[in-house]
Image 1 (spheres, rainbow, N blue to C red):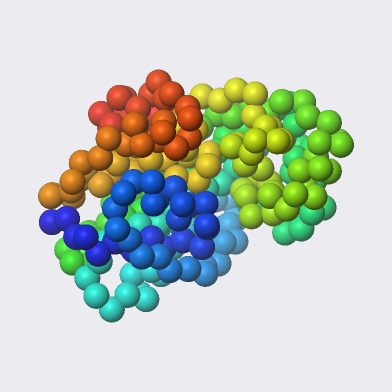
Image 2 (image 1 turned 135 degrees about the vertical axis):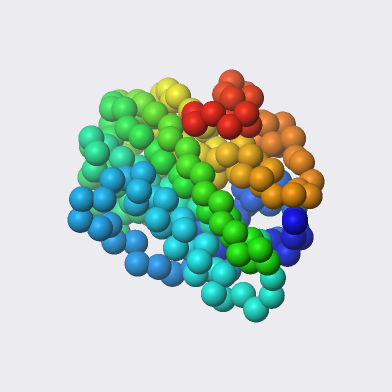
Length: 222
């Protein structure tokens, strides 16, 4: 059954902001996990594992029955995973490598219903094409400080840098939280008060999504 005691296991201010758009009351906690990839681990397996570990870590910190929500995002270029840059130099290298190219952004979700000891997982994959921004634009963006806590060292929604020229999939997922994928996962729990997630997303992101009916119908798209 649906539980109003929702805890978002996330250290990301942006993800917390996006979760607040939904209109559900929630608390949040930070979860520190080892984010080192296993040898030979595929990007989708990696991001699913980290989301699950974050949710489990959140569950271990709770003393009451709750619904724990966690997410993780990774950028993949030619099969190589690009996480958050360690410093400005690594951010510069990532942005240079991504410039003018197509890459994949994967966000995984994990929900744990503590009361029923049930977990739910989902993931979203979006193809993203970057524009041929200049070296000067890279430096100005790095000086803003924005890239340092972002997978792949960029934010799709950044109003000045605007690094993305085209994408196929979910805009919100590239930001860090695929809202319609989260909605369809919530709907697996009896008693969940349905949300008009496409409307919520459009209001806050300003993007009219064309794939949300297929996502909410359960298709692995986005």
